[in-house]
Image (cartoon, rainbow, N blue to C red):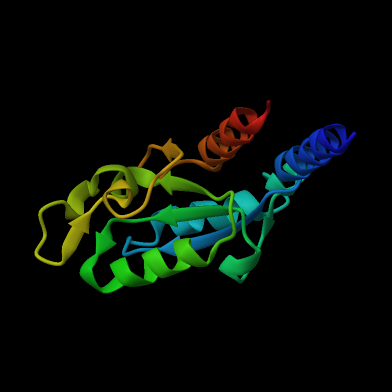
Length: 148
């Protein structure tokens, strides 16, 4: 009986996680092009909220970390701290060419590298900057991967 209750609770948790992901955005050193596209994604024109996605201000309440830009020496510790403050299970979305590979900033003296060199990444969204449709597609793919 107890195992059945745990199974039901796990199904409810998975359903809630898929239908209401809360996201936090962090710019780890980009040119703000990706940030503008993420903000456009949140507007009524593209309406990412139809998937239940809500932008949060605190990592302690977020399930998804949307990260843009290459990781700089100055932002590395902050990015790790934000990631560690998020409750389990947590997911990371790397947005833009700089977040995926370091982009045009690759090899600069103050750039550590791409996001996956610092924290684990679940979804990559390419582009410089990626269109809002691509960002929505990436988040939807993440949500599909969470389904049992």
